[in-house]
Amino acid sequence: MKGYIQVYTGKGKGKTTAALGLALRAAGAGLTVFIAQFVKAGHYSEIGALRKLAPHITIRQYGTGRFIGREPDAELIRATRKGFEEVRDELTAGTYDVIILDEANIATSCNIISVDILMELIDTKPDAVELVITGRGADPRVVARADLVTEMMEIKHYFREGVRARDGIEK
Image 1 (cartoon, rainbow, N blue to C red):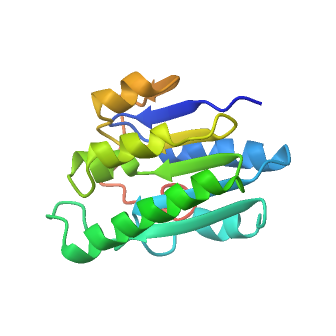
Image 2 (cartoon, rainbow, N blue to C red; image 1 turned 90 degrees about the vertical axis):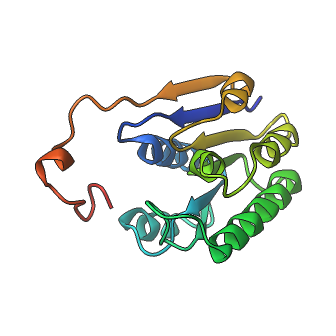
Image 3 (cartoon, rainbow, N blue to C red; image 1 turned 60 degrees about the horizontal axis):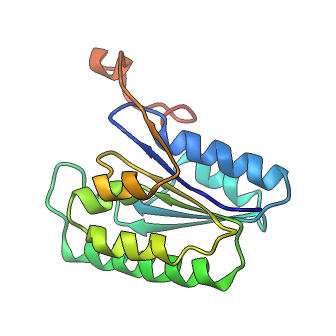
Protein backbone atom coordinates (compact mmCIF):
# COMPACT_ATOMS: atom_id res chain seq x y z
CA MET A 1 0.00 0.00 0.00
CA LYS A 2 1.31 3.48 -0.83
CA GLY A 3 1.81 5.78 2.12
CA TYR A 4 0.99 9.48 1.95
CA ILE A 5 1.91 12.59 3.91
CA GLN A 6 -0.89 14.11 5.97
CA VAL A 7 -0.79 17.43 7.82
CA TYR A 8 -3.26 18.56 10.50
CA THR A 9 -2.71 22.23 11.32
CA GLY A 10 -4.58 25.39 12.29
CA LYS A 11 -5.65 27.16 15.47
CA GLY A 12 -8.66 24.95 16.16
CA LYS A 13 -8.93 21.99 18.52
CA GLY A 14 -8.60 18.48 17.19
CA LYS A 15 -5.25 18.08 15.41
CA THR A 16 -3.78 15.53 17.80
CA THR A 17 -7.19 13.92 18.26
CA ALA A 18 -7.51 13.39 14.50
CA ALA A 19 -4.04 11.83 14.33
CA LEU A 20 -4.78 9.54 17.28
CA GLY A 21 -8.04 8.50 15.64
CA LEU A 22 -6.07 7.53 12.56
CA ALA A 23 -3.64 5.56 14.80
CA LEU A 24 -6.56 3.69 16.35
CA ARG A 25 -8.01 2.88 12.92
CA ALA A 26 -4.60 1.73 11.66
CA ALA A 27 -4.04 -0.54 14.68
CA GLY A 28 -7.51 -2.00 14.20
CA ALA A 29 -6.51 -2.90 10.64
CA GLY A 30 -3.37 -4.66 11.88
CA LEU A 31 -0.93 -1.87 11.00
CA THR A 32 1.86 -0.78 13.31
CA VAL A 33 2.04 2.84 14.46
CA PHE A 34 4.81 4.97 15.97
CA ILE A 35 3.75 8.24 17.61
CA ALA A 36 6.38 10.84 18.48
CA GLN A 37 5.02 13.68 20.62
CA PHE A 38 7.18 16.79 20.48
CA VAL A 39 7.06 19.61 23.07
CA LYS A 40 4.66 17.57 25.24
CA ALA A 41 5.73 15.63 28.33
CA GLY A 42 3.91 13.96 31.15
CA HIS A 43 0.69 12.03 31.40
CA TYR A 44 -2.19 12.77 29.08
CA SER A 45 -5.20 10.46 29.09
CA GLU A 46 -4.40 9.20 25.59
CA ILE A 47 -0.99 7.94 26.73
CA GLY A 48 -2.51 5.31 29.02
CA ALA A 49 -4.99 4.18 26.39
CA LEU A 50 -2.40 3.98 23.63
CA ARG A 51 0.04 1.99 25.76
CA LYS A 52 -2.68 -0.66 26.15
CA LEU A 53 -2.54 -1.09 22.37
CA ALA A 54 1.13 -2.12 22.33
CA PRO A 55 2.71 -3.62 20.29
CA HIS A 56 0.47 -2.18 17.57
CA ILE A 57 1.04 1.39 18.78
CA THR A 58 4.24 2.79 20.28
CA ILE A 59 4.28 6.30 21.73
CA ARG A 60 7.25 8.35 22.89
CA GLN A 61 7.46 11.92 24.15
CA TYR A 62 10.27 14.30 23.24
CA GLY A 63 9.45 17.38 25.24
CA THR A 64 9.70 18.93 28.64
CA GLY A 65 6.10 20.05 29.08
CA ARG A 66 7.23 23.53 30.13
CA PHE A 67 7.23 25.54 26.96
CA ILE A 68 4.10 27.33 25.85
CA GLY A 69 4.45 31.09 26.32
CA ARG A 70 8.19 30.89 26.92
CA GLU A 71 11.38 30.69 24.93
CA PRO A 72 12.50 27.09 24.34
CA ASP A 73 15.33 26.13 26.69
CA ALA A 74 18.36 23.96 25.95
CA GLU A 75 16.71 20.89 27.50
CA LEU A 76 13.69 21.15 25.20
CA ILE A 77 15.87 21.71 22.15
CA ARG A 78 17.99 18.67 23.09
CA ALA A 79 14.89 16.48 23.64
CA THR A 80 13.39 17.55 20.32
CA ARG A 81 16.58 16.89 18.37
CA LYS A 82 16.88 13.47 20.01
CA GLY A 83 13.29 12.79 19.00
CA PHE A 84 13.89 13.70 15.37
CA GLU A 85 16.95 11.43 15.29
CA GLU A 86 14.96 8.54 16.75
CA VAL A 87 12.08 9.16 14.33
CA ARG A 88 14.51 9.13 11.40
CA ASP A 89 15.79 5.74 12.60
CA GLU A 90 12.25 4.38 13.01
CA LEU A 91 11.17 5.77 9.65
CA THR A 92 13.95 4.02 7.78
CA ALA A 93 13.89 0.78 9.84
CA GLY A 94 10.68 -0.42 8.20
CA THR A 95 9.11 -1.45 11.51
CA TYR A 96 6.09 0.88 11.34
CA ASP A 97 3.37 1.41 8.76
CA VAL A 98 2.25 4.78 10.17
CA ILE A 99 4.42 7.40 11.83
CA ILE A 100 2.83 10.38 13.58
CA LEU A 101 4.86 13.49 14.41
CA ASP A 102 2.58 15.16 16.94
CA GLU A 103 3.30 18.89 17.38
CA ALA A 104 6.20 18.80 14.90
CA ASN A 105 4.78 21.97 13.31
CA ILE A 106 4.98 23.72 16.69
CA ALA A 107 8.58 22.58 17.02
CA THR A 108 9.45 24.20 13.70
CA SER A 109 7.31 27.33 13.98
CA CYS A 110 8.87 28.10 17.38
CA ASN A 111 12.38 27.47 16.05
CA ILE A 112 13.00 24.53 18.35
CA ILE A 113 14.04 22.58 15.27
CA SER A 114 14.58 23.87 11.74
CA VAL A 115 12.06 23.28 8.99
CA ASP A 116 14.97 21.94 6.93
CA ILE A 117 15.32 19.04 9.40
CA LEU A 118 11.60 18.26 9.12
CA MET A 119 11.82 18.44 5.31
CA GLU A 120 14.81 16.05 5.33
CA LEU A 121 12.77 13.66 7.45
CA ILE A 122 9.85 13.91 5.02
CA ASP A 123 12.20 13.20 2.12
CA THR A 124 13.48 9.99 3.77
CA LYS A 125 9.95 8.57 4.12
CA PRO A 126 9.71 5.16 2.45
CA ASP A 127 6.89 4.85 -0.08
CA ALA A 128 4.88 2.43 2.05
CA VAL A 129 4.89 4.56 5.24
CA GLU A 130 2.02 6.93 6.07
CA LEU A 131 3.47 10.07 7.69
CA VAL A 132 1.21 12.34 9.75
CA ILE A 133 2.40 15.74 10.99
CA THR A 134 0.36 17.80 13.45
CA GLY A 135 0.55 21.20 15.11
CA ARG A 136 -0.27 24.83 14.55
CA GLY A 137 1.74 26.90 12.12
CA ALA A 138 2.64 24.36 9.45
CA ASP A 139 5.40 25.80 7.30
CA PRO A 140 4.35 26.47 3.67
CA ARG A 141 7.03 24.01 2.45
CA VAL A 142 5.53 21.24 4.60
CA VAL A 143 2.04 22.08 3.33
CA ALA A 144 3.27 22.06 -0.30
CA ARG A 145 4.99 18.69 0.15
CA ALA A 146 1.99 17.02 1.85
CA ASP A 147 -0.62 14.98 0.02
CA LEU A 148 -3.44 15.85 2.43
CA VAL A 149 -3.70 19.01 4.53
CA THR A 150 -6.50 19.75 6.98
CA GLU A 151 -6.70 23.08 8.74
CA MET A 152 -8.62 23.05 12.02
CA MET A 153 -10.34 26.39 12.54
CA GLU A 154 -11.69 27.55 15.86
CA ILE A 155 -15.16 28.99 15.54
CA LYS A 156 -16.14 28.77 19.19
CA HIS A 157 -14.39 27.24 22.21
CA TYR A 158 -15.58 27.08 25.82
CA PHE A 159 -12.02 27.80 26.97
CA ARG A 160 -12.83 31.44 26.18
CA GLU A 161 -15.53 31.21 28.87
CA GLY A 162 -13.03 30.01 31.46
CA VAL A 163 -13.49 26.25 31.12
CA ARG A 164 -10.18 24.58 31.91
CA ALA A 165 -8.85 21.46 30.16
CA ARG A 166 -10.75 18.41 31.40
CA ASP A 167 -9.37 14.89 31.95
CA GLY A 168 -10.39 12.59 29.15
CA ILE A 169 -11.69 15.41 26.93
CA GLU A 170 -8.85 17.91 26.41
CA LYS A 171 -6.09 16.20 28.35
